[in-house]
Length: 358
Image 1 (cartoon, one colour):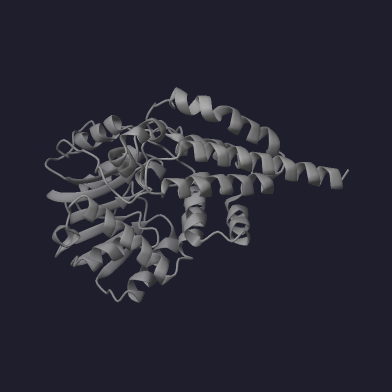
Image 2 (image 1 turned 90 degrees about the horizontal axis):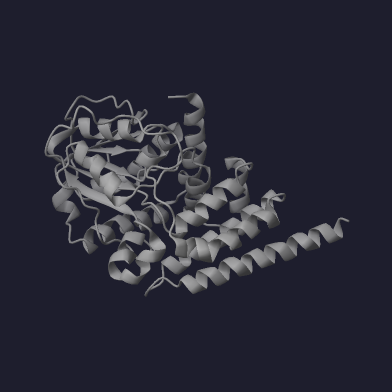
């Protein structure tokens, strides 16, 4: 694994996630609890007395969730040394002692076959250099009969349509500058981490349900199906609760809780392309018709003013998350209005700057 990739992950994930305080950690652990409850799953029954791996641990939210539900022991692994340090400190702060950290790539895990009763990998696979090799390693170290929680981004939907534009628009701004600017603008730690995850991670892949479920099947999971429910802003939850939202949300968030029933096929783990896209899934015509002109205009307006571009992208993405968090069907008209209004404000601000400096 290249030192450059390690350095990028240490900035994008290490510097942002290490800033979380204990109440923020408790909030995220609460989201995991709510997701399990909404799918009628008892986390204590899942984790009690289990030996667990937190693969791609970040700041240790998954480790804390498992230990809080009576896991016997957690090994946590991450390519970022900062994440290993922050996870260690957070577990200590929460009063846990039975854990060991490992600074390592998930593509070369330092464990024997079938070492764990449970593997937790939340929002990580799609960011690795070789996702299929990562999946092969995760399932190799999981015992037959053991369970895995795996979360990846579902393909399509207006959220990823916006993020693709933001990644392109902000490509010439460093991750460190993004972090500093977002903190100056007063964004909470969770939003700084979320935006850097979306904008600056080296690899950002999304998957169709059928594609990723098929990959899991190849690796030894029997008839995998993504969980239908979550917290309100989870697009999978919205697709299930409000069927009319499906047109705007693509394949939704893909979260799996699956049991390994067999050793994966020998052919599994063939590297996929290093392109940003995990599954070839075009955005719906409805999304393109409503938003292509808006985001094309945004690029024309702010492409030469990086900090205005950053502020504009952050405001649009913040508004999108707020609309997704509301009760009731997704208010697509509200999001279109916010996107247009924000682009207009940015154009006005840029015009004032240029007028004052002419």
